[in-house]
Length: 259
Image (cartoon, rainbow, N blue to C red; front, top):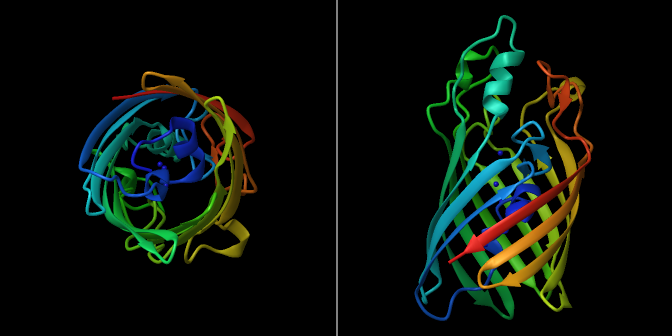
């Protein structure tokens, strides 16, 4: 469901599109990354029903502050929705492909970032599930970083992740990055996903939170460990075919190689 130009796997899974928070590169740069996580969590919600995911991406950052990139991950939540339907329906959509671009600039000592993000769930047929629509989603975002703190707001221009009539949904998150030395960093995070036009009795809105420790292992290799949780409603975020609560508390391990 993915939320800095080089994506730290578990951090991305739990804190949204984090590539939007790093300062502009001093010169044009092109980078790639591949890796894996023990499960893919996005905005606190499991995208793989607690199972591992393979991930990777590419980023181009211009010295002027403009950037574009793409990122992909294996997922299962769309198929899970089809399996949970009565009767079961075929929905496809095993891969998430994100396309994004934006502009970073300094505003009186505050690092600003504005951009657009398109979530593509390739070949998805989520609209076959009663009450759902196509999973593809478009968002615009704005982020401000001052010192160790980053505040970011994302606004959906389309229905949000297959929720019908949810255009105008928002995700607001606050995170901080603390350098602990010797290649370690600590990243606390809290976010609030508001899904427009969902009933209070079965609201898809929720708050997520996480605490991530990252370790730079050198030569482009990094690792992360994240503790993740949400207050999402079980009745809304449960894969009924396996009775799996997608917003449950979890530890997520990740490794990434950037080059």
